[in-house]
Length: 56
Image 1 (cartoon, rainbow, N blue to C red):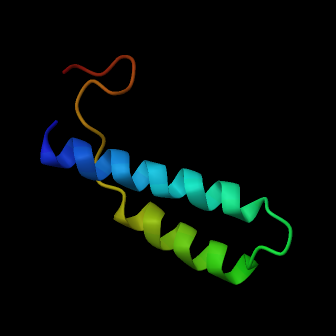
Image 2 (cartoon, rainbow, N blue to C red):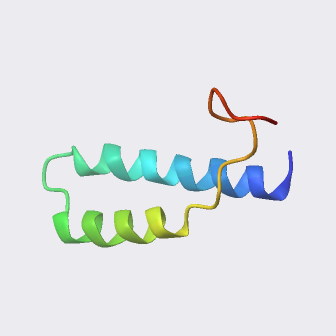
């Protein structure tokens, strides 16, 4: 797997874990907001061909 692909996959995984945490009782909403924004901002460009209609 290419380095950019690994970074993209890792960041998406972290966003998924954060979304799951946000749904737990007692989740810290400020933490979710700050970390969600930071992770979304740091999300690298998706690997070529990841989405339908893109050329690889």
